[in-house]
Length: 91
Figure (cartoon, rainbow, N blue to C red):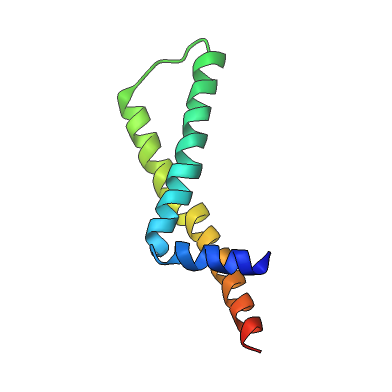
C-alpha cells in the first residue's frame, strides 16, 4: 500500500504544487460544491434570481478559497506522508 502511494505521489508532485492545488482545490472541490449550492438554491428558493455577476463572483471566490485552502492543505498532507515514507525507506 505504501509503495503504491509513494509511486503515485512521486508522479503527481512532478506537476507542481500550484497545479495540484488548482486541480484538487478548484476543479475537484470548489466548482462542484459551488455548482451544487447554486442548483440547490435554484430548486429550493422560490425567489431565486439568476445573476451573471453573482455567478462570476461566486466562481472566482470559491475557486480562490478552494485552491488556497483545500488544494494547498491536501498538497501539504500528501507531501508530509510522502516524506515520512521516504525517510522510512532510507533506514
